[in-house]
Length: 258
Image (cartoon, rainbow, N blue to C red; front, side, top):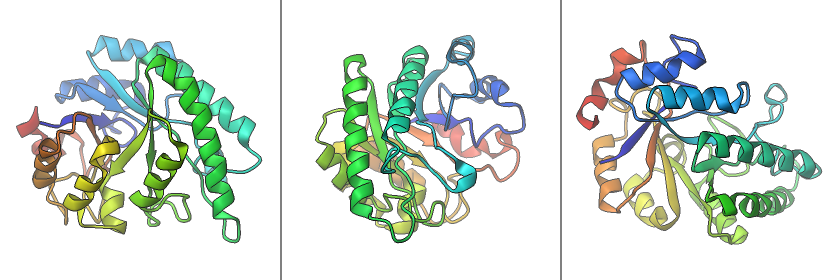
């Protein structure tokens, strides 16, 4: 049975961020993820996890300047020092939070720029991250993003991410498969799951097309959850969706899995 993680960036937004840990625990979640922890001291976040009996399973490296259209800097040529500071900071937080996995954000490739150069920069920075994280048993995941969410992101398809994982060639670099993005770009999700199973380390879910609870739209999530069991997936399933309304009111789908 999948191990569901509440995404505290997108869920339980009825309350301030630091109160979402309690809200998730009250709703029956044992695991949490969110985009970024850096607005808060790591020890404060760890105290929230401990207080409510939760395990942190994922967060991201810093995104750069979101207002300027950035979505990660680790693929941007000339920003290597900044990327490595972000990686070092992510490691500091992962150690305190006892978080086993960090998503390293790549970056947006502006029109007219060399995608190959951005890819190579990302590979070099991922190798740096891999070597820093490995002694601590912390893994890295990469995620492909659909153009509807982040146009011109370095990785649009799972094959884009798989190629980079292969070229990085490190044994603690894996794939994060977000079914929302994958359905928007690729579809054929069952066969896609089979194809990536050997490098699959984290999963995220949301309905398509509206990115709400996984009980509506065009993806049959009970079938997908059975598929994950079938391939022996042992990782977490992050609930990275925007609730239709009140978060708790929309958790009917979750009751069967508590």
